[in-house]
Length: 290
Image (cartoon, rainbow, N blue to C red; front, side, top):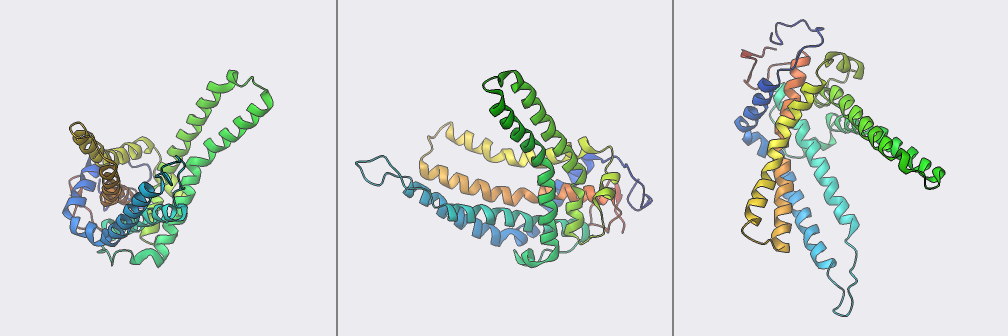
């Protein structure tokens, strides 16, 4: 049943993972020019900062003189700036790709959406979902440290139980965040009236489908640099310069393939919520209608 045929309030629609996964990949390659349009400035800026930071690490981590093995610290403000730019770049690209996939709105000038409401609402929801994933395990670890301090060396009896609780709470947090993840796409296209409760109801019974879809669209592209790197290092011993260049290229590549998994989330949103037609794709063998 297509979005056009489904009642707007119909919940619990099973997500067709393979159809939407294929659509995410095909949309990416079909609109690769749009990928470059929305990311070129971020690629240049991130590449410059990462390369500069890597070069400074090589220089600053060298011994101060030949008589000592002490090294100067890496410039933390610069590394922090590079990390912040990469995060901002990822969010900016994600918002533009959501809008292209759901609203068929062509990307604006690369980086120009940073000052817009959808960008910052996307940031806010991302922080909430991150807190849902991270806070329960951190709370367990905090309690475990208090237990360790109070047990006076008898902590081993509780260790494996604590490990299980940490992983269990982390898994539960991931499941909750997955169920709520379509809210990110909603914020990107300006659907501010959509609530956490409504998204939770619409995605009922699709936790594993959302998880497998994200894995299907995120993991294979992310494995490509590792395969290439280990293939090369099997014949050539990498130098420090080669490692720095490879690290820079890898991070830029990650930004470039980010729209694939974002596309899956966009099409998943369109599956759960009646949305406007995308840029000419078909879902489940039928054309998506507005």
